Length: 387
Ligand SMILES: Cc1ncc(COP(=O)(O)O)c(C=O)c1O
Image (cartoon, rainbow, N blue to C red; front, top):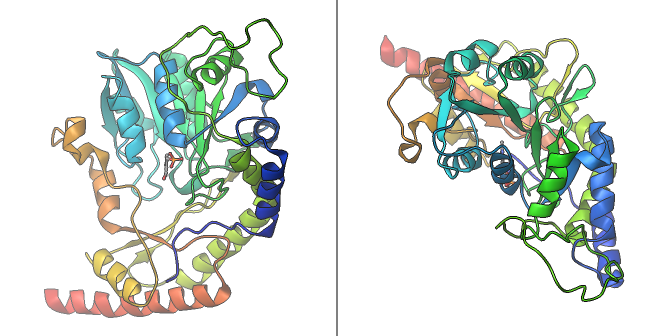
């Protein structure tokens, strides 16, 4: 099967893990510190703004807690969002308010957002669809002007930026994912960023049961009398990562430029070989100054044939999918039946194609030729059916 996502983990990651095993210090320690320091540098922010977590979902829940979101509040998020984002909002007792998206980029436009803001809007939880930055700079300005907190779900945008400014650092908080399906993989893990270093420090403390004394671990750190005593500052969970996963993260950071280069090549190949295929729209060109991580490559297929084309590809061993199914239709979030026409249209026609750095030219040749064949024959069939 040609996978849609696939991690690239090899000898270098194994060697780094082996070194951690040999050190006999598996928990949060020197490697985690190093990973956080290096990720902060990668984002172009100070070390004091970031802390690692055991997942992006956990970081998103944490962001909601630190934003003080609760019952009576509204949080606006794109209808095309990950389920973990919806859950993070709903778990606080606040109302998730889903907004429409650009039908081509699947990103929230300023106009979509402004329509949904009310005096009860406490925060906006934004996604960079597929790694495309979208109108993040303008949206950050709107939020700032209105005193609304902006949290960026940067799970897709590990290396996306606008005019050199990293996605995830435009707003008040940002969260990243390093799970097994992402570009930079630590198997499971996430990162949390806060513009205000005091918020970042609070986050770090919350990550280990809210222990007042917690500032990471090292074997010889606490020398005060009765170093086993503690105070609790929040009733929080255990959400830290560990040196095994962080060591993998450090190697993946070294390899990230190569991953991004290969992904860019694949995107260029799709752009070139799918251009002009009747019935198929490609992702719009990035505006000047915008850089995408190229996490997703999505096409949009006319004629109501998207699902059968996905099936045809599957039968040829090519896995595709649609990210992210519409949250405003989920009953548990209080679906009202309100229409979000552009998001709904996008959800009917969009298909995400295989995109990962281990994809070979042969995989690409097959995917492109099967796609051409499937779209052409299914479209002819659909048009014949209507005649
Ligand atoms: C956009 C988005 N946000 C958040 C997450 C959650 O990440 P994690 O698996 O690290 O919790 C995902 C995972 O697929 C995602 O795609």
